Image 1 (cartoon, rainbow, N blue to C red):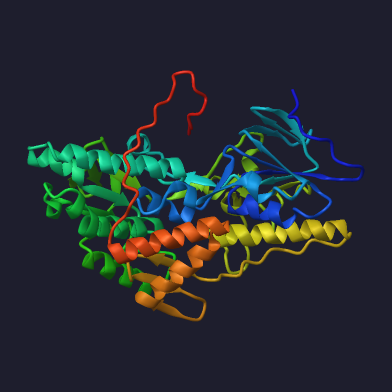
Image 2: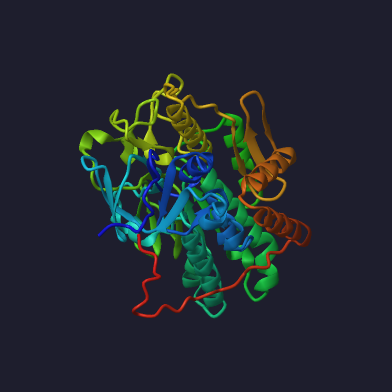
Length: 435
């Protein structure tokens, strides 16, 4: 069976893009007005703005504010065709992909399938810890937090109640730091109003980091400031501590200590998503595709990888680029421009990453920003973080809604989206997301 796709026009080349994240979407947008036929394939019919997943989980933003329909993005681009399905396998010899909808031939294939949470082989953590790599996972976390708070109101046993209200976050990178800060502010400003019967002073929020510093990829000043900000908010920061197990009630550490918590948020690492059809030599560190400076997989001129799934070494990055949105966007733009050059019968230009800086927010009025020439923390850094993330969202409506929500939350010290929604799924329904 073949996917129902209009045949390319005469002399028109077909580029199949697998993945609608930052890399795949940017690449397709860049070639939307060219003579190529672009087939964009994703398991969802929307693009997700991952940096703000944690705000959905903390009831600060509604999911639709950080998601944008792929079809709406390309309404005016007739050469961009979208199919919602998952790619099961790639046949490099036939230049064909196999999906749930059927098979599809490509002239060029761009793999932008991104990354997933890395539990480093720990099956108990993978089964029981909560990750945040999708909108649905963020909503699941929100439901877990709110449901446990409701249960805590009627739980008289102290230890059992602590398990319901205490939260452990594993991983001191930007995601872990931002989640910890948001939870601490919820504990301080929101929960005492919503749950006056609950002693919110009993709520403990732990941030566990295996290394000696937070925000390891950023400057020492950023890590130190982030730790200071978190401690001011009441977060218990445990550095040089490695989590080894979680049984659903107790988090176990390498030093033998344990913390009781029904919720463990895992933000300790990622690895590339998997797809069949590649040899071992195609895959390298972190389950990423080994690509050259033109983003070609194994030097094959019809096969490319961009974004988190691509491992590329260059002078300043001998161990590969960081798996962040800016790398994905820049690789997508460079590869798309190279395809434009191909139309003009010009040579490809190699990719070079331009580091624009890193940032993380730790609650209201607190953030850290590392720019190539400047490093600053505090209120001004927080304003910069807000502006950058606001303008990075897709769609005017999303920008407006997020801005209104942020203003409302800032001036009222309140979130308006604390809804405990329990979806009812028919036993025969196919609309259930699976890992």
